[in-house]
Image 1: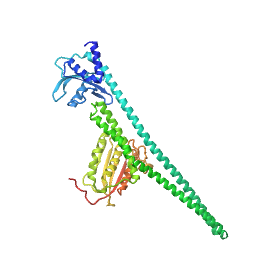
Image 2: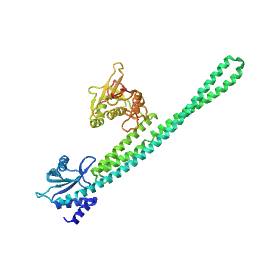
Image 3: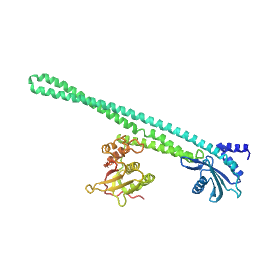
Length: 467
């Protein structure tokens, strides 16, 4: 092929609109059925199909093994399926982080050196496209995250300032009340020892009583103001569910449409970017849901559907949600088995508490550690069932064991810090447990793991059986 012809091939492959047509022309030039290009992706450490070429191939395992051999040897022969189960003789060439695969070659050895000289330049074109796309996606993601974080920080800061102002007013009123009480006691003593000054002291007492009433009124007003500010904060957050979650759900919906290819073909690199966006969207939605759940609890908007719940069924239900995390970190997981008791609880809220406790145990236990879920029925308390989550992680210092159940508290190395969460998981879990007439407590020794115990009322009746 002449020099102008080489330049035309490079130009056609570098342009997405003409890439497929250029690949067909190359296949004819090499005398084979199809030509495929692969480019190394440093993030996953393997060769991936270049943009514009088929993203899904039959028997992917055989293709990956072929490409690995091609990458190791520089050139490799084998039989590969392309459009169906029939395997076709194929030749692969690899250098400079890119691979050329000729599918359905004839018995004659194709003349490829002229094209291999262009392979580094073509690989650079594809790498540039990927870098530009990733940069655009990362920039958009950063802008969206910063915008949402700023809005949430503004709301929380305003609430904090209101609470601090109300608390300062309450403290001032309390100090004034204490001073008034001290003065009243002093004047009562003077009245007892100086009867001749009774009238004068009576007038003074009336004046002090009036001041005391005013102080009490001021204290009550300050208390009402603090309660109103707290209710306003809770009411505001509780009513923000639709406004905060609708945009995030819309992002998730559009990502699914893009991933399904409704707006055009989706490359492997684009699908990987979609997954990163979706993970961050779910993370932000989880933070917002935690804040909203706490607000609904504080605002008294949370309803409990108490019923007979079989613990065996709940433990089975949550297994698919927690086992991928356990497998990823190579933990040993032991769970309660056999005949388990029935408790009186709200099924969904019980699942939420157990998922939070197990997720905390997974995240704060080193890889290869042990996590246990046990069920006990205390001998001295026949009306209670205890569900215990045990890990051998870093444990919780003694001075932090109560504060981890407070909202927005995050203690480094403790179970109140769930990944990069807002420090609400344990606070919400304990409130939910108490809302079901139970409790959530912790036992721990620093450096020797932690043991969280969820106590719930035992139910003497069996839950209804499904169809």
